[in-house]
Image (cartoon, rainbow, N blue to C red; front, side):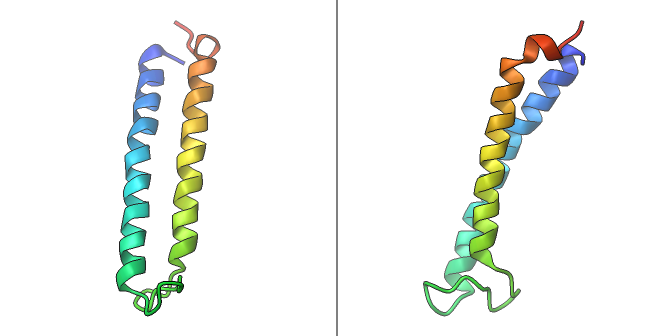
Length: 81
């Protein structure tokens, strides 16, 4: 992989972290306004399980960070000039 492609990949992965965090924030706002009780997780408007969406976003952030760390650890083996 060329160095420029590697930098683009790392940049995209870094940009995804705030996007996933915004997804968590958005789901928490929906959880506040689209449910009757604070303990409910199912949206009355869309019918989606908002608690599951929040957990999936947390997992995606963790996987994203792990991929970034692994790419940085093995960058000398990955990058071929």
